[in-house]
Image (cartoon, rainbow, N blue to C red; front, side, top):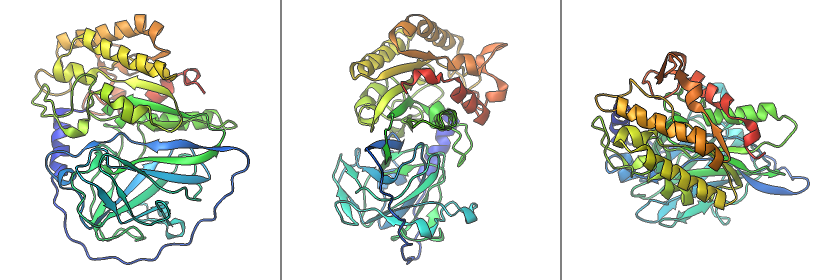
Length: 436
């Protein structure tokens, strides 16, 4: 979810032009020793992101050409081997991947997050080759790599695209600084060649799986920008799904914990497409994604080991489009039915307050009444239909003004929680509901 002002800022960042950069030559670091797992192992999802098609203007529309992109992700669970998922789901042509690497960040140069630890640098291969093609609309899975991934650590994936990709498949709200530069920089230890540094955008990267023993599966968070991290500190991994993963690991030190996969999209709606406009002169963008029901087959059901889904959607339909409580509830019920039909544990959350957000027409007493009606249904009939309810509204609202966020949890835009609010949300998830 996002404010009109916030989206205008993102749109302006997306039209950056690519500056040239000198070629950088570097040798790969020494290989990490492969660990032979003992006993039965299986693949488990440690990190994933929902993706959309590129916007109509700017970098995500033109794509990358003889350029590298270096992206940081934050794992949830660890394992002895890793594989990386790339996607061209929304592309308009086949995409050539010239080279791909994975590494850990250089912790000695924390001020420059583009630096990697060369001792950890490993090349990713695809059917034994260092290059591959992602067919239009397809996914590309790397070969398993002996690279021990730790719980709750940052990994850096660098991809090189030798020829024009065309419109990218991407996630628009990474809340992490990523880096783009000219030529093949996949093995460059330093970041001098990366000339563009947006605080957004994972491109063509959609997942990281690890091989581990006795995995209890994964929890998928299916939401909008509240879970996508708008309002949280950039490069701090303070989205509430990240903090939920922290809590799971801390609370179950002797037990294998599930991965937590944040499949949320800022601005996503239950009943509307990303480009559809909304209140407050909100123009709409492709990066908001298709309607949530259309996302299930791509963002939820295929995730490695998914067992539980937390749905937190609907507030955008209310503030952007003035949808009725009946239409919001109908779509939430349909999501629930499809999740349960697949044998998944289906949890739902109440819709959180947003009075004070945006300009005229964004929040109105009438829209507040719709939000309250949805929450009333969720706390009543919804409890009987879903497998569990998480009352985020009760956690975040100001008791004296229940249509507003508690000031201590307000990031400043009156709709997105700050780091403290995200922690409160993570703390509010009953772990007993997660089908562990």
